[in-house]
Length: 457
Image 1 (spheres, rainbow, N blue to C red):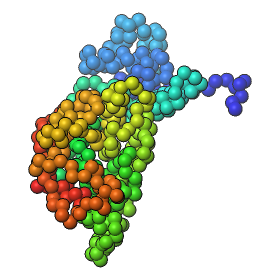
Image 2 (cartoon, rainbow, N blue to C red; image 1 turned 180 degrees about the vertical axis):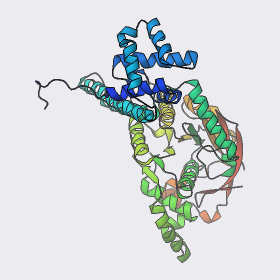
Image 3 (cartoon, one colour; image 1 turned 90 degrees about the vertical axis):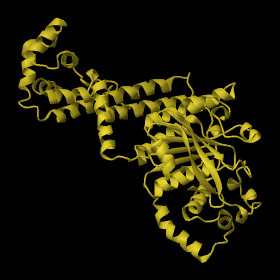
Image 4 (tube, rainbow, N blue to C red; image 1 turned 180 degrees about the horizontal axis):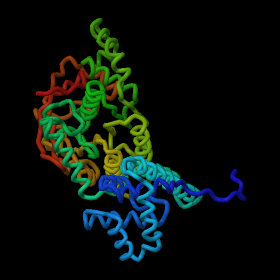
């Protein structure tokens, strides 16, 4: 334990680096631009440095230029000139840096110390909250992880950005797209027609893939993830609340090698199929696919685990199978309210991590009863899913058929009752019923249920 007689330690800071930043800003517009982009007023430890920095930024916004005379007059008008040390201290700032060449180095020192101070304050808040008896442990853990992640984002992304900075980023992105016409801006699905509609799964978007049971929702997501991880070599994470991880891996093996799931389960494999599996093992062993098959998972748990896996492995795609099996943080009187809380949390997770978050969802029975294409109102248990989702994708059998067996591919017992040799490829319409930032539309895929494989056409 710390010695109570020891004086309190000063918070991390570097006054010389702060002077270097302010002096560089007075010498160079480039340094001023860089400091304004990466720092904010509270990044400075010394209060008078905060006043000087704020005055310089606002002066530049108003006049598009800053020099020692203009800064003197601005501080005098604010009645802060004597407080900051007068003209003599402004001159000292300029003399502290003979050139602005090291401005970025000074800025990084100031920013790192600001992050450390913020981290210390955050740790103190977490400590105080942990001593309180009034909050649930799950709430404390979620809030603590959110605050710690906010500190990391502060280091990576800086403070609030102004419109001109955002416009620069947008124009740079537009220029890259213009230089590479036709290139996807999001994460590819492996299906050209679907990617044409979506332009890939966009970072930060919450995507819902919905259908009745047994229609291949999970298989479609696994097809996408197999392509993403094995062809694109992009890390992805799957949270499966219904299937065990071993079953998922078995299905991925069948998808990857186009092997009949019945033959795979029974071990009735030809020499060629065994060879194909053996040849694929080395590739699949290094697959950047991460699986979590916890049968009971709360929204708090999911967000905490997703944050960790994203930080550890930089995953670019997260899938949840399926949304209605996630548990809310606390029980509500209304199931619709619970599902609304879950969908809002998944949307927030997508934005927080800036990756596509895909959730498999169930539709109500009206689709089967009326033998029609799904509608947004068919999303089961809550209208909040429709509201929160950036993209909604429905799977619809274009031959008018319904699910032949409810989730047969997930149940070993039911698999034994199906003669897969007699199951042809089934035409499906993949319906993009909602896309917040793009067009709606549909594309045709054929589902080979015996292989759990979707193919174009």
